[in-house]
Length: 238
Image (spheres, helix red, strand yellow):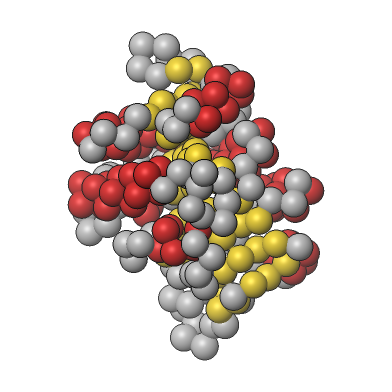
């Protein structure tokens, strides 16, 4: 029995959130911090799935803007997410958290193929499942992949871990008067083009009544507090 307000959630980690002070790639300190927080959640009885982006290594849309074929660029980006997933798995298993990586692109030598029923069974057994390679298709972001997997595994909530402490009406890095929302509806996000996730991912969550909690990953303990029902970040629902 979980000690949290949800029993099963999906955690979406942006690739950029893993960079830390390194500037590129994966900061080992950030990876260790994330792994410690995940272990605490699993110990509390939470069934946890994870999707990791690949923007710390390669961004398909940026490469496409520079002239690379979009489908090819997105395929490279999906492979970057597999690298991050394997790195996180290694760190989790170093601290005795049983973990499985499932990839939408088959690469059986290093991870399992994505099979919905198998993923759910892993979660029921208390294993952390990391979904890699997005949806396996170009033109879909890892946000959309995360929303899709969250719905498929019947998660009750999606946590979106970023480098900012919630959702704002404009970029707080540019406008110091930016307003932070404690709660916001899917309709407000879509109508006002507020960048929580891409519109496909937001619409998928809206259609399946999947709450989204957006919070700052760099403050250790935020995941735990959010799942305890404390006021952390921004809740997107309704």
